[in-house]
Picture (cartoon, rainbow, N blue to C red):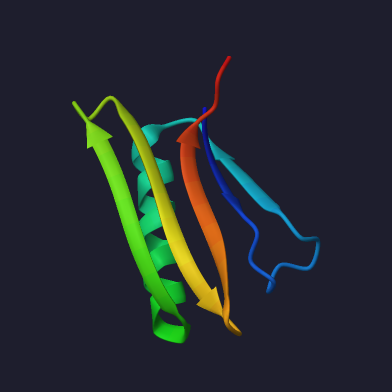
Length: 77
């Protein structure tokens, strides 16, 4: 199971967590988040795909002078 977790102040409940069963769906959603956020805020993305088996990434988002993050990672069992 892959998780995308964010602490953006635009989320109503503080942290937003989404889960996907496949790596491909999670990476696609992560890249869509980056495209959406980069249109509104200063962003920097790092995505690691080692051997294309696991994906891990971070989007750093500058909102009102503070850095917030969107993280992609594989959930431990």
